[in-house]
Length: 405
Ligand code: PMP
Image (cartoon, rainbow, N blue to C red; front, side):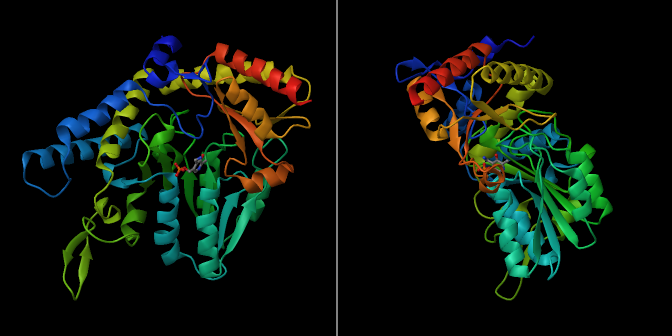
């Protein structure tokens, strides 16, 4: 059923050569490549459908508006949201977090309140909360991790208290691949009276997400990490929370009536979509969702897991290979160092062999500090990767080690 070669043929860029070698793309946690039907949908939009949304009575405006709103429905079904209106089109996960930190946070956080993140977080899920804490004289608390890169759930339970107002953690860590127990975190946080934001930037492309089953208050993800375009992402929020929040940005589309004396705001989701949105991005994102659905997240997950185990076992054969992130529940990331070798040097040699990996902090500086390392080499796996590409990575890492020691 799952035919990786067939899938690879859907991605034109995978046939490229880099430095005279076949491209081996293992930087999927940074951004994924795009299947032809996503690229075609973008061309089709600008060739046949382009118009501004929600504004005109003419044919094209109606068409673009219908496609835009249908896309919201498709993505809402993808994460099993209760209503499409609970989905806000944003630029990506970063904007989604900023929106909630600003809009929900400014209204609901007071002096002495606590906001909790974890050691595993991306800078996007730290800095907006930190700024909010500074503005409101609130306190940022941090859930520690163990040496395998798993959240210390006992410490989390101890940190939770009646002052905890927001808990914001990722579903899957971009640096270590740890799959966090999101449902349990949400349940415990709700019991303590806190609302929960789940950063799903690394999850919706790897596992089936059901926001209602999770009971997440907010859930965010980025189109470009799930085979869709850059510049578009989703903020999901429970209707009653979004309804209670003030607009994040203001201008056209987010208003109901404007006068110089008083302006009233539009209903959900438009209240949070000021100005002309990324119409093409929003429409094309649903094509990426249809593509993922056509392969099946269960199949994707199984394939990626097999590769993760295969690649990790193989790389472990190399003397001096040190793996970071050894969680029992882990997805699609192999983060490592070669003893005595800077990650940047390993990455540069791999690049000469046509192998794209990410090196450095992966926007998780506090996490790297926790391990006392200058960063890692990160190979992150997508549905189109193969065992033979992992063999190339293995040979590449061995070569890097020979050259650098
Ligand atoms: N959170 C996590 C876990 C991520 O991996 C990323 C992207 N690396 C982000 C947030 C930010 O996503 P974006 O840059 O698409 O806004």
